[in-house]
Amino acid sequence: MTQALDVNERISELDCSEAKGAPTAVTTTATLTTSKFATFAITFGIAFAILYTVLERLNWPLFTYHPAVGKIDFWMQRPRSGEGPPMYWYGWLALAFPVAALVGWIATLVSTRALFCATIFCCALAALWPGAFEVWSYLDDRSKFDTDVVQSIIWMSAIPGLAGAVAVTYLIPVEWTERVWTRLLLIMPIGGLMVLTFSLRSYFLR
Amino acid sequence: MDAIVEFIQGRLFWRILLFLHFSMAVTLLVAVTLQAISVLMPTRQLAIGNFIERVRPVPPKTVAALIVILYVPTFLLGCWVYIKYRTYVRIPMEQFGHWWTVGTFEVKEHVMSFGMALLPAYWWFWRDPLSTDFTRERKWLTLFLAFAVWYAFIVGHTANDFRGVGS
Image 1 (cartoon, rainbow over the protein chains, first blue to last red):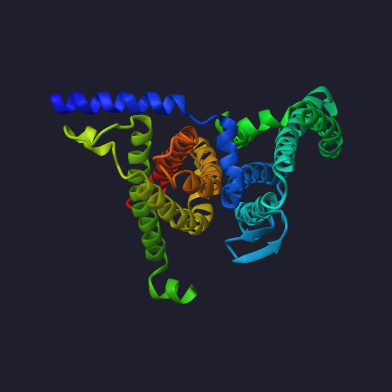
Image 2 (tube, one colour):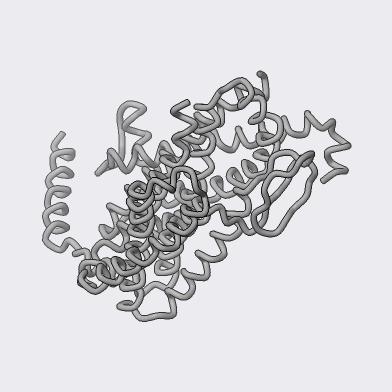
C-alpha cells in the first residue's frame, strides 16, 4: 500500500514536470519539419484526401476496369452494352496515390514557409471551389436539367474559389498554419468523407 | 491467375479469398481496438487487476507496426475481392432494392482508402510512443483507423450476409 502511494506521488511529480516543460505546437511542428519522412507522410495524407475527393467527384479515374470481360480502358469509359458494370475505384486510387506521393516528395524539397503556404492554399481551394460550385448551381435553375450548364459552372466557380484561396493564404499567418498543420491530416479526410457521403445521398433517400 | 481459378473451382476460390480477407480483418480489428482503448484510457503504471486493466497497457509501438502490416494486405485483398462484389453481389443487391447496403459499401471504399493514406503518418507518430509530443495526433489517428476498420468490418459483414460465405 505504501509502495503504491509512493509510486502515485512520483507519478504526480512527473506529471507536473511534464506540464511545465510541455511542448508547444510550434516546437512540435519544428520537430516534424526537420524529419523528411514526417513532412512526406503528413503532406501525403492531406494531399491524398483532397485528390481522392476531387477525382471521385469529377469521376477522373486513371483507368476503367470492366470486370465481366476483364478489360481495362484508359481514363473514364461509360458502361458499354454486353461488357457489364465498369469499375472506377481502382482508377481513382491509381491516380490519387502516386500524385499524393509526388506532392509529398516535393514537400520535402521546399522551404517550411512555402510548404505551409501551399498547404493552406490547397486546403482553402479544396473547400472554396466546391462551395462556390454548390452555391452557383443552387442559384442557377438551368443546372437542374442542363449538364452543359453544370460543366460550365464547375469551371467558372474555380474563379471565386481561386480568389478566395489566395485571400485566405495571404490573410492567415504562417504561424497559425504551423499550429494546425497536423490537424489538417484529420480535418481533410473527414471533410472529404462528408462530401463523398453527401454525394451518395441518393442511395440513402430512396 | 486463370490457372489458379481453374485449379480450384471458381466459386471456392473466391470464398477462400473472402475468408482470408475476413480472418485478416478480424485480427486487424482486435489490434486496432486494443490500441484505441489504450489511447482513450491510458495507464500510468504496470497493470495488475482485472482483464480490462491488463489489456490497456499494450506495447504501443509493436501494435502500431502490426496494424500497418495488417492493414495493407487486408486492404489489397479487399480490392481483389471487390471484383466479385461488383459483379456477383452488387447487381442483385440493386435488383432487390438494398440501397442502404449499396450506399454504405460505397462509403466503405472511401473510408478505407483514406485510412490507407494515413498509415505513413500514423506509423511515424507511433515511432516514439513515450514522447509527450504528438499525443493528440497519435490519439486521433488511432481513433480514425479504429473507426475505419470497425465500419468496414460491419458493412463488409452485412454485404457478406447478403451473398457470400455461408449465406
